Image 1: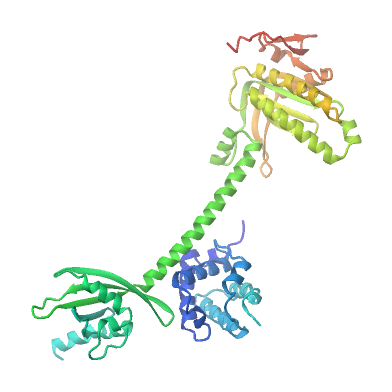
Image 2: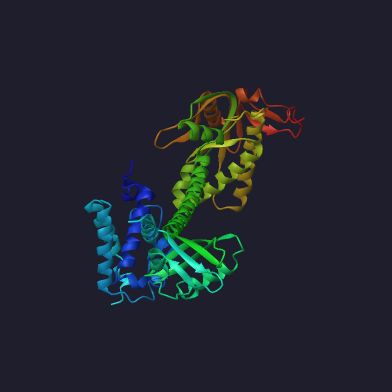
Length: 120
Length: 340
């Protein structure tokens, strides 16, 4: 029998939806990364977050690197923004008692895509 | 504190936005704190059209019938957030002034959740679609390995119970010159040739109501009457066997590799079952299969030998030449009893 994905382990969509909403709040409230979302409409942003968080946790979504690169093409994102984003994700995962190992895996998957977002 | 004061406090602090608007001019006569928080600070002489999304609300307000109620939704951005407010407008019961009461609820969270569910539902739908495609693929593979009835049984119960089929006819065919072909040709060429030949056999068999059970390198085994009964199982197999050899003869005239086969057919009982747990395959074995094998080894090259067990079932369309028990099959061209 295969091992449970973090997605299944933490309660599937029920938990993911809460994590997404929390992360969404944090991103918008943050003055460093928030402005990136000024012109993004809400359904698109939520769609993006839902798929993203699901896929990072091994849920029913796939996110291609090309898709990620395209979505961030016209944004000037610096390493500091990316670090802030990781910090917010870490915070959110902590709030939902995601085990350090699983949280590290999520952040690792995120770190692996730094080059797709950050310009310099 | 008077009751009136308490009421006022309540109205101000409540999580619902409340405002009183003069309908003809849009002048805001009263707005509670929540309303101000959402649509902008309400100063003296504030007019509804000047507020956040106010023009839209004012437009709606004008359509308010004399004593009616209307509901509307407005969306706008506040601190990067898309905010959606549902507004219910009622005409105030005031004889002197044309006033409307606006009751506003923040439904942004609901809208956000709706978007999330939409997004998730789309994801799930796409996955369901992929899973269905995968399932069809697996089903197709399994149907190559076992008859449909066995597959259905396997799907429902996880196992296929062995079944005894009392009277069926088995055909086995093997190549007399297989060893030399292997020695002389490239493996890839041999596989591709066998693929060709066996596919042709499958097609011919299907036409006559017999089905391939297995191939093991140089031998091909087919049966008629498993798992669904076939009335003229011996005739089906005999017709197919003759055409297998005819096909090979034809093919040999135009291909560099000449396949020399002999075939044997026999009737009797067999057992049909899925054999194996991890690597399952539907197999047919038993007296009729052994008899067909035995008969085949007695067949001359490019001939079909018929065991006595099968001979009994054959009608006037066929004649068996030679020794009883392993004679060679010929078609007579006559109509069979079974066909009419």
